[in-house]
Image 1 (cartoon, one colour):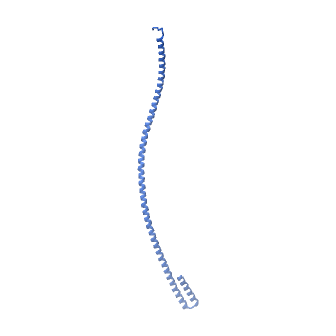
Image 2 (cartoon, one colour; image 1 turned 90 degrees about the vertical axis):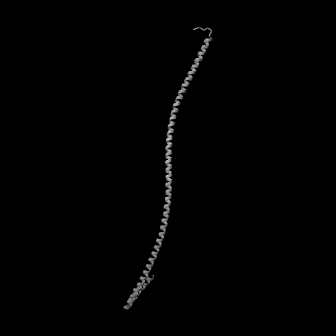
Image 3 (cartoon, one colour; image 1 turned 45 degrees about the vertical axis):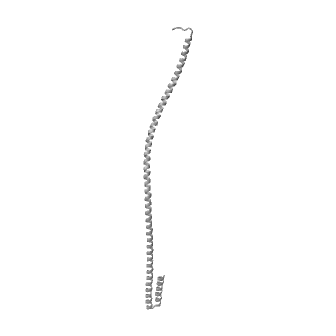
Length: 177
């Protein structure tokens, strides 16, 4: 503001001396305008320099703040990376344990399947043997039934023959044959 006021004052001084028409007043007014312009330039230069220094200081403080933030973020990143490495190590260990369990379970499954196949074979063999024995039992029952019928027939024949023999022995007239 002061520099602008000085430039306005210099312009007024030149205009006033030019209106007077005096050569000496014009030279003095011009010199005064040059001095006032130089003073305005000096003030502007000082303000620009102070502004630049302030801006540089502000940028330096900002840079320090960003450096601290970057250091904190780097520390956080290192902590995060270490935490993730720990979690990955735990997960890798868990995966290894699960893979081992899976291998063991696969071996147990293979053994169980083998045993199941053996039991299935024995069961099929037992079923075929059971069926063969059922057939034999059925045949034996049929033969036993046939034999029982034959025995009953024979007993009936024996009974008839015994009755005939009794009748023949008890007959009064026996002829000798």
